[in-house]
Image (cartoon, rainbow, N blue to C red; front, side, top):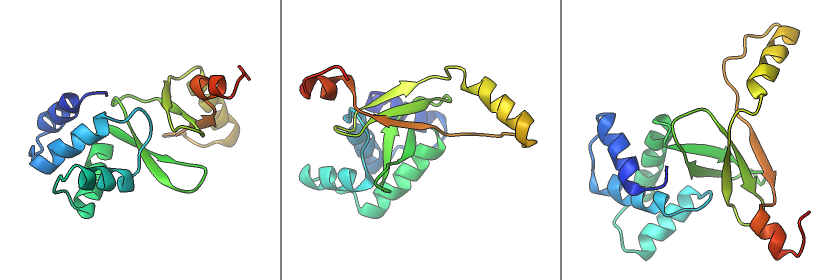
Length: 146
């Protein structure tokens, strides 16, 4: 996603009101280079003196998630986080050190899901994959490529 304008335009295209809190949250979300939590957005809004309440943040995140503009991640800690996205099916690689995320396209997973469906008898309707590891920048900062 990347810019507040693209988030706001997506809301407008979907027929939602472009309220000041939604615009402000779009700016806060677009500023992230990795995952963020609802608490992060509340803290950032408070620090910037943006009048956005906690309930508004959660409602906006729910709306952005429904529209495919952000995706909810379930972190290994059990915490829920979000990452800005394009509304197309993909997966995420998430750095367990800094929180940076990278988009991962199919890479053959759809074919494997067809095989899983054939073996189990299930009609696979959807899936979600989150990969956790250490990003190249953090590995470099640790002093090695591994």
